[in-house]
Image (cartoon, rainbow, N blue to C red; front, side, top):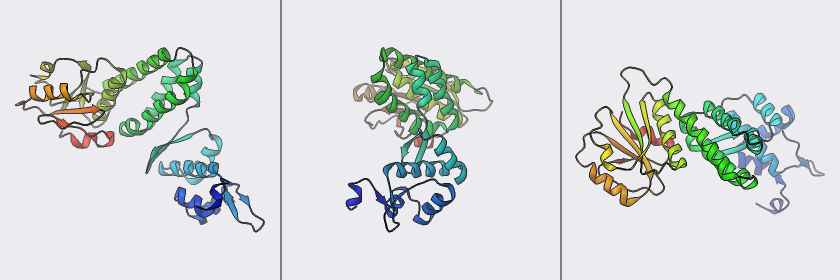
Amino acid sequence: MGNYQESKQYPIRYIAEKTGVKPITLRAWENRYELLIPQRTEKGHRFYSDEDVALVQRVVALLSQGYSISKAVAAVKKYDEYELVGEGQTKHLINFEIMDNAIYKNNISLAVREVSDLYALYSPEAFAQVIYPAIMTHLNQEVWPNIQHAEIARDMFMDGVILRLQQTVNENNNHKDQKKALVVGYRTAMIKNLVIHGLLIANILHVHGVKVHFCSGVSSKESFKELDSYDFVVMFGRSDEFYLGQLDHALEGEDKPFYMSMVGKQHALENITVLPSDYSEVFKQIKV
């Protein structure tokens, strides 16, 4: 990119390439909203910093969510501690400060409430695919290593998330003529991240009008036979080729649709439809 990268000062064409915002628009935002205050050379050429790039990316993320430019600029100026999460065109702003402070003060219920508020802002697919992984990555890297009794705090936090997601599955789940699904863990050993994975799947089905019954886990492959009260069954669990092979064989000849969402490497199965790892694609694969 030239010597300007070495000094972390970039010309306007660079920030335009990084953010997708045209130079003429960047200049307008600078003049009209005072969004950016670039350094200038003696000849008046603008140069921008990494912080400027991140600031424009935050504005672009808010614009993609329907904010007007004036409200987006006001938001990023007021809440400059927001972090941009996601990949490609799917990016969101999250403020971790309240959640972090709550955990540092051992107020786990407040931290879970922040997660609940974020859940309410996004579709179940966006929350599962982008928001929740960003939360856990942040906590694993920035919070849990810096507190005492981190294992206890982490498990309490995950228990709270499980309870919140379970409550959502149970809400407004009594409409007539709904398709009925059992979402059930297979050999999950009650591992909390696997249970949360299953609940994220359950919430996606729920928002699409499916009446969901949730079970955190069973260990016997025989448990899945003669489930006549359900229209289809979605199983979830670890990517264990041996046990999944046994389960696949046990369900040979079953008429009911069975689906499997694996955590880890995907394995092809003959009698069970394997769901994609991308949460946004899960419901598209299920024939309701």
